Image (tube, rainbow, N blue to C red):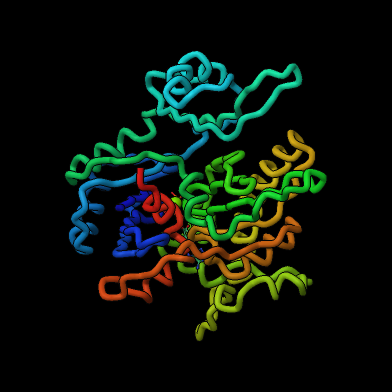
Length: 376
Ligand SMILES: Nc1ncnc2c1ncn2[C@@H]1O[C@H](COP(=O)(O)OP(=O)(O)OP(=O)(O)O)[C@@H](O)[C@H]1O
Ligand SMILES: [Mg+2]
């Protein structure tokens, strides 16, 4: 299966195949996104993206002609609803009556999905079922389809980023506790990209809530670009070199929770960085701005469902490579942070894949990997 993920920083392609009960990564490719041509998961310049993608696919020798793609953004709706018991076909037919209660845009112009989660009995004895409703406007994916048409590829599955994230990190999820008194233990998948930060709340392997924050690493780079009046690319390098400073008193416990090879730390650099203090402050402010939005979402969900405890934050996306971000996140939120590797449980075709690059960029690949895991 081939998946393509159109990011604001880079466009990624991942090719997986099934091996018994696991997966093998056969190929992957990445290309820098032409500046300004993708923002918040939407393609703004079809021609520029087409050219970049075509070049990357050619270079990587990716010839598969069916692809899985994703949608994201604040218009994506995820809701658990309760309906009378019905089969899959009846459910899909019934959606045209049920969905308008939750979906504020034209259903004819939407992608709709509904999945039975479980059956339950209401107080009056009525048998009902819990259904997960997912909706998004088709317009979010129109430009992606146009780009794919230009490179002669057919979209196979369109899924929401959160579902891809859950599939990418299935090995990291906390099993549901059978003990009701424990309350609802949930995991948080946090994917921090260049223009978006995706929060996915999961119980067991069930998607419960998702929110897209329209902020990411590019916004931090832009702070540096503006303040120091340097080109964007230079600001990007400065941001990566400086990273985040460790909290004053790092929590001892958390250090051991981070496997040593996953720990990010600043490379020793020969030359001093001009304006180091100022950049340090800008990076810190930029990160905290995003953290504040994350906090709002976690608090919002908790006030709706009081018995929720967040077990751990499964961190991914390019921003996860920022030095010390895991430690700072853990200190700020008081939740265990796992630097997650979306390649966990996946073997790699070592003949065709550059392992060094794969290791370097694996954090950016979680959406594409999760998408490629989906077979239908
Ligand atoms: N070592 C690093 N230190 C700090 N930031 C980093 C580092 N490596 C990558 N990043 C940041 O990660 C971001 C890119 O991540 P990613 O590839 O996940 O984004 P994207 O998928 O292109 O964007 P989006 O999903 O938001 O459209 C960039 O903002 C980049 O600056
Ligand atoms: Mg992304």
